[in-house]
Length: 240
Image (tube, rainbow, N blue to C red; front, side, top):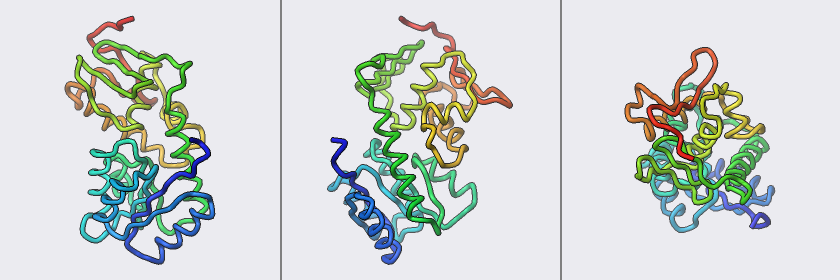
């Protein structure tokens, strides 16, 4: 499977930029498909099942943010890198809040885009559990099935994106241990991550919304001020 070229979908309304990206990615041995609008992009995601989507923010009709939101709901295992002409932090964080794996600001070097695509795909492959890994991680009301990619809280299935799953796995392997943002990045995103460290905070906020009873007052993923984060057992005991 590793020898098959990865399929990349480019969703970009400007034809010159779309073709520029496509030509360079094909030179890097990716299989490339294209879409000129958000609607067309969603249709091709359903029909073509790409490994990764390069998604422009400013699209006619359905914009890139809405495409990302729908993609995350329907196809949580497809990776997303967002393209934006905006450099403000809020625009970048919006994409991360919606579940994008990375973003890149226009104008960009095609070599950088290829490097980021490979890094995201590599992290996704690394998140696939090997037989040597512990299959089930348990802590209080939580059960994480690393082989079946399934998360259960109080006997209820909760859908996590691949990145949220990997982040929770990092925490559940380091219970009661304070971790810096850099440590979390290295353990979850990999040492080759070249994006914004703020992605840690964004994904932790999203994860809290899914696993905490009161996300604004978390008892499991605690902020360690001036240091990073720590995963606690909360009110429950670890089940062995």
